[in-house]
Length: 164
Image 1: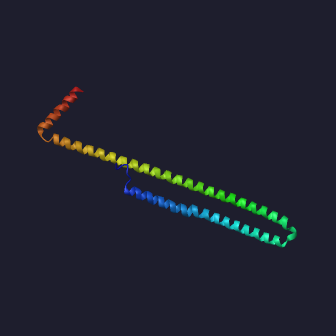
Image 2 (image 1 turned 135 degrees about the vertical axis):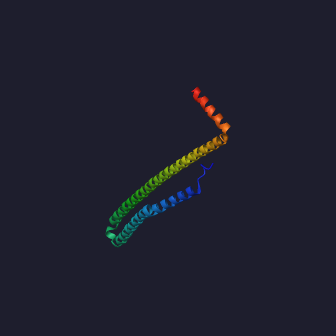
């Protein structure tokens, strides 16, 4: 049952590795992505402000109001559509990158767990073998403690050799 339940050390190191990964992803991936999105939002806001300024100017220029208003609306829609496309692309790229990084981290963690499990199994096998050797040695010492038992053991061994 001890092989199935993780030890305190394994839980500690797994948690520590996960927290380090979160900090690294936060500083290396999320901040640059959010900065790019904020910069794009600022440029969109600037474009919207420019469109509103153009609208105010059109109100002052009644003679070309309809044509200028139509062009401004088309430009604004194009900018908004482009901004949405860029935003969607940026978000999907960020999700794909984060997913790939998470997959890599999970795979590395699985490999580490497997290696630690194999090392633990090897250690257990070595301890069992050592215990078997020690028990055999104790049994042989107990059986061969007196001269009669030793002579009987030698006779049996000689008979086995003669039969083979």
